Image (cartoon, rainbow over all chains, first blue to last red; front, side, top):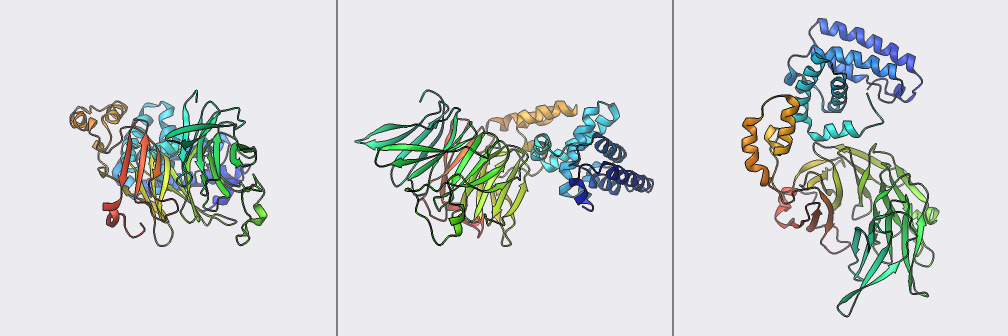
Length: 135
Length: 327
């Protein structure tokens, strides 16, 4: 992932937030062109797992949320997504489910079912046990 | 023993059994005239003992404990008595599993702090200094050689490969870790797999590992010719690829409620297969032990035991072609 080195410095919060803003502009343009899968990939790519800063995590969550809500063809999306993104997507799905917001939960639940079929219970396990890289 | 016996190991050459228990004690049992006679070993622990293993030369054994320490016990001929030396440093939490390197000096441990560590357990008078191996620098007792930070969750089940070149251990996050060329510059690989976490592993050859755990079905992992480890297959019946019926009836009901759909249709055929989940074990497999000559490079038979109270013996004789050339 480009810029992976920056994740290690947890105090670069401002830099990360600016990067998330540029990313969200890119995603908006991708969504306008109906490139939903690309948008989701870009959103998941820059996930800042090693920061403790809640603002970074929330900022990234908003971007991912936007990309998740527009997905209509779940199977196609999962087909196009690489295996390494499954774990991160699962973490964001659980964050979505924790919001309690009806449309978000519906969408997250639908994706969760398909993702579990593909990735297996191990994927869920990894989300539950990973307390270091939370989203 | 007054409490749960948490670890047991049988030395094949000297024919002694060592047991450790939650009552913080350990006994070495010797066969005298047809009866097993226990000898108490004072471990000097203030918490439960969790696991035990005889060293390859069977002159020492290692005990992992909940007191964040590892006890190395050796026999003192003059006093006719087993003495325990503790490795107190380094561990931040309970030591779940220990494994001896074939050179009888290096010991690998896993702990619930998620880390795997390798220590030297050189004891003067018991071990002889190996002049050829470059281990003279680390031959102080209790010296940590290596610490592996690969897992974020509890680590279990560490084992060395037959040559001592590779280390494998399991993390509770459904991951298995392989470390090649253990030493100053190790090569680590983390393999994530689909299903429930493993509890214990066994090297059946230099390049093949069997993992057992909460899935109640042993899994085979193999390293290909470039040295990359990956999951190969299950032993025994192969699970259906990715259909809903690959989960047991308990899971389908739970998932059914979760997704708010009626799983009445699938519940019917799930209930037929619920008892015959296939496979041998009904519950988590806790331990896997080889049934072959110690030091032989290939393990043809092994036994597994689990929380369902069953012990199963598996024979790999017929599976040689299916396992491939790494076996």
